[in-house]
Amino acid sequence: MQAATHTGFIVAAYAVAFGVFGGLLAWVMADYRAQLRNLAELEKQGITRRSASARAEPEMRQAKEDA
Image (cartoon, rainbow, N blue to C red):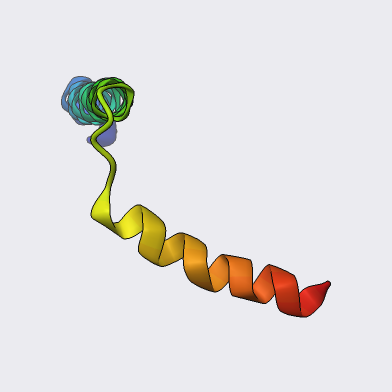
């Protein structure tokens, strides 16, 4: 059977692919947490996002209309 000679390569390729995917996933999760910490620190200092008030106003209007 010819496929048996390539089994090692196939397993190694899948292992590398899963390793790369897992590494990228871990990196994105760590960066997300770091960004949340940075944002919390800025908000603690009194620095807010410019888009925060723009988003809140339409939501408040919608809540008033629904009530």
